[in-house]
Image: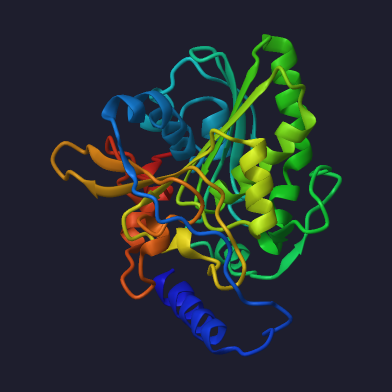
Length: 317
């Protein structure tokens, strides 16, 4: 993955900085940035707000069959009362996903698998940099100025119908009034798109939250601003020198929404992470301030905190 992706990113950044005019039909520039000082996130807040979504995101890397039966070993054992409503994916054009009911939190959960480095088709999804109009069938509140990463939108669209119908039926059958959407890497991008889609479609009395990990940039400034209004409590966790939150490059007019929580260090003995809350969009004191010349693929996979890592190796089944 390092050999395939990082040189490609470096070439794009170099071209972006040098281009005096639109390159390949793309206008280069940058959106909003923040330099506000981050605030420390307490371990209690990590446990209360970030831990459970991470457990679900880890489980999304397990096979659909093992997730359906909650027989995927430690990842499934960590959430024992969950009932899976549907699961699918082929680890390629349709990455793994599941929708479940979580009676412990009275929540319908949507979780998406991320990019597995050994799966070249999943990697190809990540390097389609073209910005396209938002699908107004799925995102009816998106204006003409909203542009999305073509690969991420296409991937999300392949499961949008089953996610929507299963979430609606799950809310109806359980009476729950909350939806949580989560994922890691490519799964984080798909999850953020799902969260926006669900928020636009579901009644106002249903709370839609999203907590994701290792999120790449999904759309342009207009998308980031729209997303901030739709999911005001969004959390996207970036881990130290992980390069993925910095792609596609900011210079290609891609922009993160607000809500970043950045891991600055992980204690190798306890597994505890030091995290900071990063105000605004593209906070330069957090992942946006990292250099593409000093990156760590292991940081993308983890551990993030509490011993949680992502990817196929984190799931025994």
